[in-house]
Length: 122
Image (cartoon, rainbow, N blue to C red; front, side):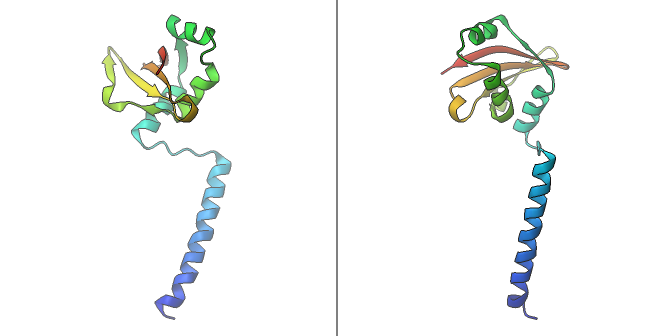
């Protein structure tokens, strides 16, 4: 059997295997948080969230709600270049995507708690 004859069989098997793996991983809800952006967001999401007074005022004015904040913490962009180390905590600026791209969160990520310090609009 020549290479030209084996190639379609190989590609067909690869396609079936890829579809099976994607289907199984989607059912399990597997996340691949290997990049720095995804790791920081996951680390913040699993911690208790504490809102500052300034952030609570923005939420009270209904400019943004906690569902939007959760969405930003799931799919936002972390500004890794401008992170600030404060005591034992690291402060990040997280910008939303798509319809929330004008919302920016300033989050102080500590050992057991994530403090949402500020919510701003551009």
